[in-house]
Image (cartoon, rainbow, N blue to C red; front, side, top):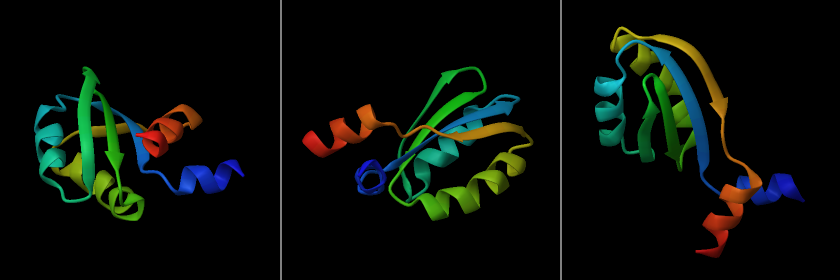
Amino acid sequence: PIAELLARTSSAYQLHVRGDAGGLVDQLRAEPWVRSVEEQAPGRVRLVTDDAPSAEQALPRLVADHGLALVSCQPATDLETAFLELTR
């Protein structure tokens, strides 16, 4: 089933924050649970992690620590991403 396929891949999140996300992105790059992170547009950050529980627990605190407002945090793992991870 699709749920099992997605569970075997890393988790991706799309963050939308209000404020300058540069410092947050730099700190996220140093976190052991972050596989990749990029600021796709001002305040729009895509994060990929191998440890979703750690990410979900730490992200709100890290956003607040950088003085940013968390507008949204959405799961961004889809079937295409899962397929690419499983076939590389």
